[in-house]
Amino acid sequence: MSKTESSSAPAVVDSPTPTKAYSDILSHLRDENRLREIPADPDANFSTVDLLSNDYLGLGSESHLYIEEFRRRFPDAEFTSSASRLLSRRNHYHSRLEAYLEELYGRPALLFNSGYHANVGMIQALAIPSTLFLADKLVHASAIDGLRLSGADYRRFPHNDIKKLKRLLRDNHAAYERIIVVVESVYSMDGDLTPIERIVALKKDFPNMMIYLDEAHGFGVRGERGLGLAEEKKVVDDIDIIMGTLGKAAASAGAFAVASPAIKDYLVNTARSFIFSTAISPAQAAWSILMIEKLTAMSDRRRRLARIGHDLRQQLFRKANIETPSESHIVPVIIGDAGEALNMARYLRANGFDSLAIRKPTVAVGSERLRLSLNALLTDSDISRLVEVIGNYH
Image (cartoon, rainbow, N blue to C red; front, side, top):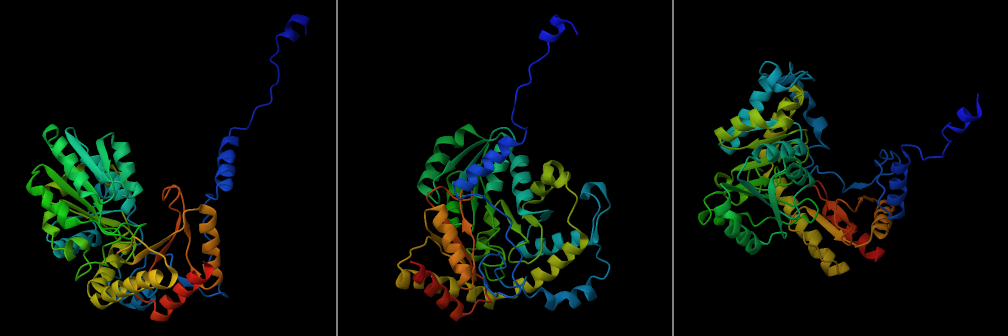
């Protein structure tokens, strides 16, 4: 090799591996007490009260009681659909579940794979030109992702601030053909309720307004038949789109939307998460039918769940001086520090209650908390002991 050739060879420079930046981010999350891990399997030798899951009526923990009925009634329900619904023949159980939901709500229903799929897919599809979305500041991440991915015009109004919502409607209604207001019935982290009757009343002044109601944490829990806050407040017919999930109180998996015939047909043709996803299995649809049948008859459990939620909130205030924004079965204990929230979760677990710390990005910095997710099978002594344990921590 000549001297010239030797001098032109590139110098070897040390450089980080392509994945180092990801490792650095993980280290940063760990330093801020925000590193997440999938929780460990339950310890068979250590029993705890479950305050983690969204099995609000206890149907999930009792699912073994319904296996024989399921096998008897749905013996041909297969465990895979093997294709999206638009690329295969109509399946009997998908159709039966949608027909059952239509019977309950009085309007057509459309199945989705999850609440996340439903919110992202529907909001993207609804975001046609001359549409403005007005979303409550605390709506679920899936709704925000749908808005961002769609490129839609949107504004976020302060949580449950109807005066601000009305101002936004007044200032923008003339500039858009439709304004879609996106709210949740029961907010998943604060456990409070949307003032849905006041939102519905705004339609009188703004006829181009539509309401998109996420009932993920209301379906099964609110209303005489468990159809959600819209049923409880008798405004189902005033809501343009209702989204409900099947993986929480209904102890199954998947989600559904209830809307007008035209909106359903439109979503079938435009909602990408519906068009391009392999459908939920026929067995899952059949199981959902069975679970919803059980759920609609559980008014006693709904009343009990409401009562123990009220009792917990009252006892936390009286005995531990803890105030909470909750109006439901979801009761947050707001701590305000990620490390302290982790410590308190460990303390509760050591004393027999399983609850996880909720941190950024699920909630804002400074509002870190424990989320106590109640179910109707909890006893009064469970509630009293929980308050005692929390009080002793402080």
